[in-house]
Length: 419
Image (tube, rainbow, N blue to C red; front, side):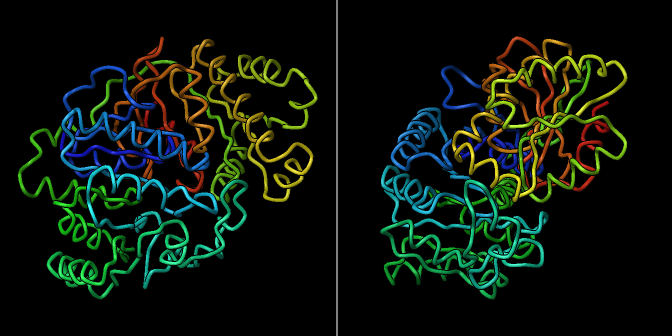
C-alpha cells in the first residue's frame, strides 16, 4: 500500500479516492476502520465521520484508522479534509493533524486544501472558492461549519499549538526543489505546519513530488492527484490502465439530496425542470407524519418510468428557520435518518444506481445500506466518481457527492454516464 488515507467525511473520502484513481492508483474506500482484509490496491481511504464531532472523539477515531493503515503496510499517511477547510471553531483539522504528527513521530507537515479543477485555489495563504474569498462564498452560510475567515494560516493557527507558516505561490511555481528548500527554512524557524499555495494542477504535481518522503500529508483531495502522478512517473504503479474499471450494474436509478449548499440547490432546481422530484419537510418529520412512507410510495409509482429525486435541500434562510424551531443537531439528524431510511426502501424497491448529495447524508446512507467498502470507478465531475458498494446485501453503484461539487446538471449527467 503506497498511500494510507484518513478522511474526515464520506464524500471527502470518495473525492480523494477519485483523484488517486485519476492519477493511476487503484483505490478502495472503506466505511470506518476495516475489520478484515482489503483488496490488493495502491491506496486505501478510510472514511470517518469526524469533521464536526467532539475533537477528542475525532482524534480517537483518526488514530484507530492510523493504526490499521500502518499495520497493513501503508508507506505514507494522508489526512484528508474538505477543499473549503471547514470544521468547527475549535477544530478538528488542527487537533487531528497534531495527534497524527505525534503518533508518526514527525515534526513537520503541510496543509493544502487546494483543488484548482473545482475552483479551490490558495494564494498568499488565502483560500478562494471560484473568484471570491472563502469568507465571501456560500460557505459563510454553512449550517454546521460556517467559514468566515479565508486566511488559512490564521484559521489553522487557532486550532493547533504548533507554529504555522506559509509556502507561497512564487516558491511553488519554481518547483519541488524550491518547495523543499522553503520547508527546510521553515523548520529552522521552528514552524511545524505550513499552508502551501496552489493555483493549478501543475502546482499539485510539484507539491506531490516535494512531499513524497513526508510521513504525513494533510490536504484536500488535490494533493492526492499530485502524489499519484508522481508515483506513476517514477514507475511505482503497475496497474494504471485498470485503475478505474467497474462492472456494469443493472437496475433502477434515483437521487437523494440532503445538502443545502449553493451548488446543490442549483442542481435540484435544474433537475426539477424536466424530472420528477419530491421535497422532504423536516417540520413534518418532527411532527411524526409518515413522510418517509409517503415518499417511498410516490417513488415506487414512478421508478418504472425513469429516475426520481427526493430532497431536503433548502436555502440558507429556510435552513435557519428550521434550526430555530428544532435545533441544529436535531434538524440535521431528522433529515439524515429520513434519507437513510429512504435509501433502504429504494434499494429494496429495485434501485441499484443511487446518487447522494451531501457529506452527512452520504454517511448516513452508506451506513444504513450496510456498505463496508467502495471500489472507486470513473470520474463523473471533478472530485465525484462512480463507486461500487461492497459488503452489503446488494451490488449498488453509488455516486456520493460533496454538497459544493458538480456542475448544475450533475444529477442527470451522473445517471446518464452509467445508464
